[in-house]
Image (tube, rainbow, N blue to C red; front, top):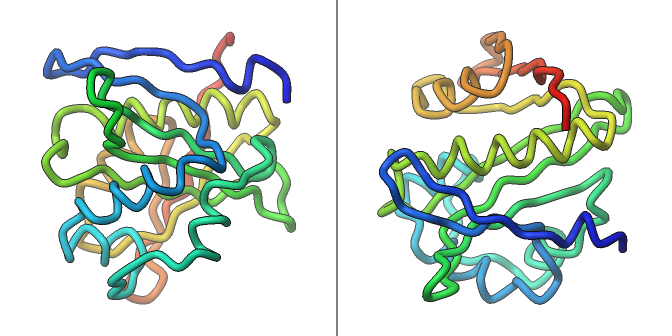
Length: 176
């Protein structure tokens, strides 16, 4: 794997807290379980659109064993403790290689601190590098936080799709 993909960086959130963002790795399964366990029932439902009590070994492997091109994920860590605080991921759509489905999860006690936007900004940069031009996400129609998060990344369009909204986010072109 090229060194560029493994590099981590520390960012300062809008509340002044520092977090380390880095590509997820197969050995991060326990960290991902830690994130999942710190999500409230509502946050779990918003992320997975179903009631989940635990992540199966197969799901943990799928979430952590990514190729960093068609499937990628960024994990956020508290720099002192190394505790995982959130993750953002994309999966490229086979029918449209310039588009990817995204998902973001941030532990509840770190909501509204700027971690979601930091994760999504980092993920967007990596996605653009891999030729992805659009993110797509299905979110519950009442999930205003997800809509606000999408608007901060690029030009967003919303379309009602049953009880969900389909967000299409055109990624901004930036010099990397």
